Image 1 (cartoon, one colour):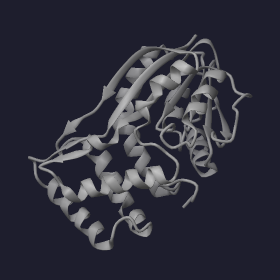
Image 2 (cartoon, helix red, strand yellow):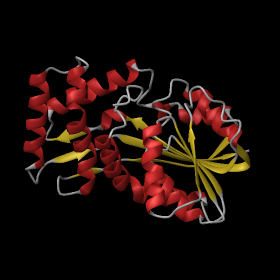
Image 3 (cartoon, rainbow, N blue to C red):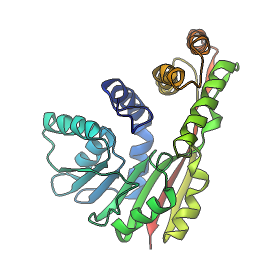
Length: 269
């Protein structure tokens, strides 16, 4: 596990991120369409992870366009490069960069795509300014960031999962991140010279039969051991959480409300 990442960068996490990407891909593509992402553009995928969105962007911009995958985990970038080679996609460049430490001054683009990055960096305000600096006048930035992580609730209530969510948020903040960074993002954008073109909340309420259910459920199963190792949950609490979630998943009457995400499409003035 890459200790610089709270959730690690191993194969299991790459697979979980693949499920997460598939859940969010329809909304991502819709946001990109409304933002005007198209053939021939130069795009930065900031905080690219293992590059699921990068590959989608590379196919959209085509051979006349270019995508810069900016990511601090070399393991993630290696996974992306392998997938790109397998699919014979050659219009991607790979930039192993710690965004907290880099100015990004050597990058320039028409569009920046940023998903679940600002909630993890230690200096989100300055990161937004760095994004602004990479964009030409009139350039577009598209964000998906958590607005209210605490909307993650089950019906009927599952107290064990609510305890898990509280532990996740506490762990997150202790590493210097802010899970609800979307509350501050509009202000950061105004300070950095952006005009917001579109903003909307993204949230689902789904039953276990929905593929969307696998996103929060997979996150729980993938992180119970991590929270036990960190001393934030006891082994007994982790086991109880696993069992309670399994019972909920077996009931067609169960519902989960997902963490609320803020989508923003903004233009650099």
